[in-house]
Length: 297
Image 1: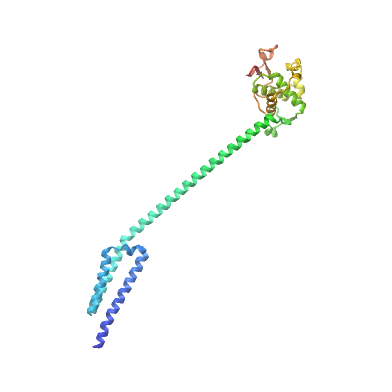
Image 2: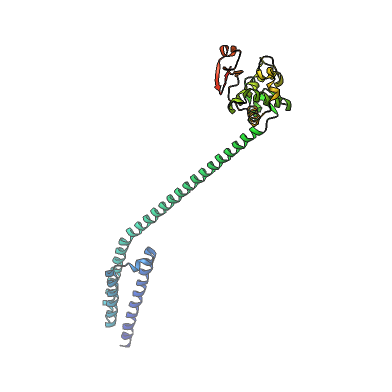
């Protein structure tokens, strides 16, 4: 009789222990699949079923019917398995949807970052381009000022043209300019084009330098300027009387640096209204007119 009583108490304890073990295994499995949200989002009916089953097992064990308790435990296990399958079936699409949403957000974030970087690079390139243009402009202005104020010490030529100082490596011959020759150039420009536009002064200097390069004229600046019957201010003495002004000096400097108001093959000019001899006008090809002077080749 005592033995039966002990067995009666052992059976309920074992049943309760099995229930706890089963419940713990279900919780661990739910956490692995869904995380903490799985247990929170468990359908209310499933939770109620779990509570009812536990309560039923407890009542059965208390009444002392071991066989009935075992049967109830089996039914509870089957119910838990069905509940697990239901939760899994419901949770899997949600997990897939969340994964897709996360990936879509990551893609949008990456695209936004890429677009931002592209805009930044474009802005930086535009800034660098603007700075480069400003630097080039400043350098050009500095070069232009230098061309006006500082004459080159040497002229560089090819057979057909006067070169700039930057292109001197292309020259086939060069001509060192003395201070006396520089003054002669300034005086002849002043004497010939004192009342002419600045471009006309540069053009007169161009003609002198074109003759220096040409094989049909003397080989020095002095001899080109003082060649007989070529420049009227030399013949009438005006060249010796004038003092070059700032425009004449700058025009000569720029012409020697390579500024050209007329082409390299322009070798003549005259004022049609003042010239006594119009042979050039009738025999040479006109290039252009600047002020009162007409230039020919």
